[in-house]
Image (cartoon, rainbow, N blue to C red):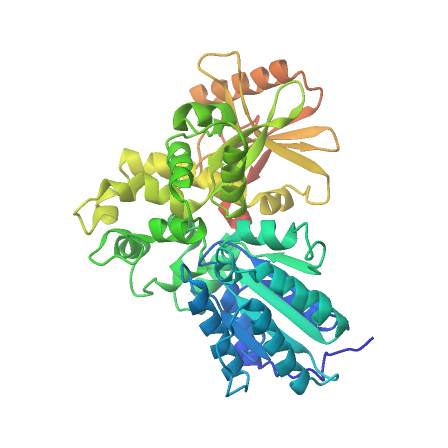
Length: 490
């Protein structure tokens, strides 16, 4: 089995590698695929603006045997013209615009055969691949033929496809039931930066922000690398948020509409579901979504919810009664940028300093509490590590009473294989959180209601997740574990 560690044609420069912030898991995976000694078909996907193209281009120093990118919303003629441009850049100077995708891939095959060297990897990178599958184009069939009849027979070929329309890649490539069924050798799902990766990015680019500031910035941008690239390191977090969302010619003023329409051809029902979920603090069941949107609870809604989840707009989490319910889910917005957009950007304010003028208002403080809760849901691995349970099998969920009035609710429960449950109370504040007498009683009632309604015999551990921990005092004794902001950055 060949090893392309040193003899591949990709000359990786240390200075280029350093430009990739974080992404350690993905870089190790690409290195492993390079050395595998067999044909590799890699599907890289994730939401728009998350840095997929950047990762591949920087890792391989933009040295590909063939590279092309689709154009969003363009007809087949334009996509084939883009393919021709890729052929010319790959040294086929007399390339003509292919008549169809079968001819396009046949031409590419002949080109690569003339360049093939068994002692190096042949890297093919097709970016924004969902754009190429225009109506009646036959693209996926041609790609299927190209991989199955040529690429898979050459152990040094590495085909990388990439796209933002995550649902298209999952449906047409990863879960394909035709010729591409089980042909993907590896799939890589690229998510937005974690808090820790966001900090690395900002430090690398000359920002002198503390972790509390970074946490607040994350509430608006969600760790999306492109959004972070728009920041000005001479401005404060509040000034940057104003510039991105509320200032004159704000870069992200119309970003949501561009984002959603680039992912879904018929965007209206998707926007309707997102808008409905954005109006709910806790989240909604499928039945509640149907009631609010009037979208029939059938295959259409199933597809919409699955697509939105695959594109990181929403998440579903299990509920718990006497046991964890496998088929009863609550859906809620999990994308930080989308939450911020629907909470503040649709007001169409003319105040270019809206955010600076809104700090510490009740509306912003309420949003910050909800946004911090979502941040915690995005950092479950860090929370588990902080609690010392990262090696224990767990299930996590939220809980809402069906009996009490007002409804008792638990933000996050982590149920462990050692028969313990961390009941997590999430609070966002700019100082150590102090538990009052009234709050202590509410917490006790909440735990009692949970134990009574679920009938659990597991031990309950009250766990506070708050940026600066808690103040030790008269009513802090029932708190068994504390997770701070520092540990979320771990």
